[in-house]
Image 1: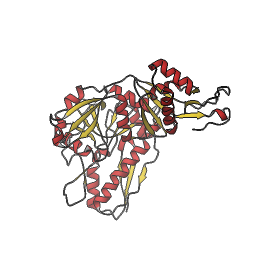
Image 2: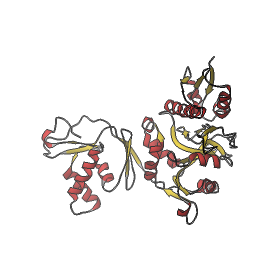
Image 3: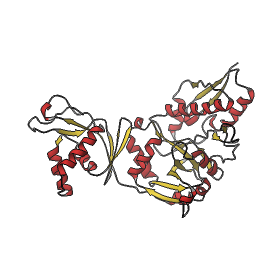
Image 4: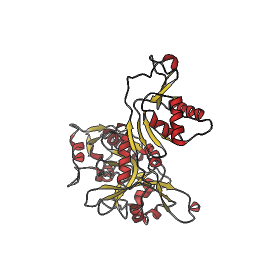
Length: 382
């Protein structure tokens, strides 16, 4: 006889089918550990996006999970459910690999970091003082509302045994507040050895461009979002910039929560753009290679740097590259680019060579396309 467990991670309908090989004891533990991810959304969910996510699927997705020991199976279930939820929300939510806690008024802090950085430990520690939102994926809609994902936490109970998947309740973590959840702060986790913290834990601002570079590897389905870099930059602006917390023990961070909320990151003004395919060709009378931005590139331009997204790869451009990027909206040549940059920044030694090196790097990164003078009017070579 097959039993089912219906879950609703991040608004996605997932059904787990348990066959006769699954013991009643394991099933009971499974239902208890996932109790906060079952049922319908909480009363008073603030945004229609949450409700739409629940009604868009006519039938639940069925996750077939096969494992060895109970611990292996529980871990596979957690991974599979999470991946299902992330996949079905691609392009609809900003999903960050982060731990999240909520204050009583619904403000949420996201602690961002890669696997092994200590997110579960931080969620477990802070979740005893603040509402536990997630230790894995923090999802935010385009209006700043947070979808909680109170999945079981993977913790070491017995060092001689594999990690166990324990429910928030079993770990003594607090429930969510009775208030709409809104993202209030984004924090980059920087855990160091105790001897490296001479003056104790530290909060420091992170410039927007650098923050995007740090965050992108921890974002799921970023290129699927509409205007992905714009979505990320607007989220950073709305939370007063990104902060970094340097600490050695999770218990130190709890005392920093009020300061985290009052601190600001290094918010930088930006402009955005997206290069579209262009059928025009450079003039055949130029007699010189011509260059322009390659199609399909999203970018943010700051005062002293640019951030680009192309084929799921994010790059930070510094030096003269941001100045070049501004000039490459239409076909232009090395001579024209060099002259423009000299007018902007003044005469420098070997200016033409420096511009050529920067252009070659942009071409190699698939950010700029080139038409060689000998084949103008025929085909572009990148």
